[in-house]
Length: 88
Image 1 (cartoon, rainbow, N blue to C red):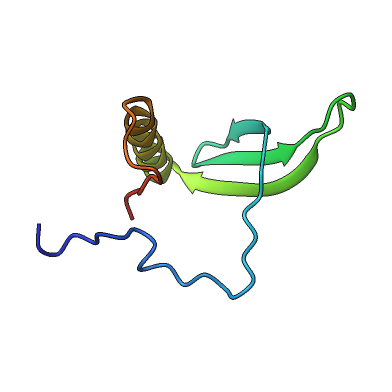
Image 2: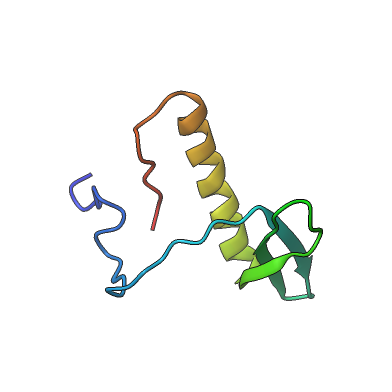
């Protein structure tokens, strides 16, 4: 495809100071219209979770995220590229 973006990060405008966050805990809940995914981090032996971010998505955007994650997991398991891409 000629109009396909080769670098998925090309269209993203990251701020000069952008710090990726590690998470190892999550909670998923929903309302009749939206899904809420809360990510956090916990360090044993404590059972306390420090919240990192909370995302609110429509059903359509959640389905798109799930499909994208499944695709990335498949590539990862098949020994794909060193750094996964992702759809925009």
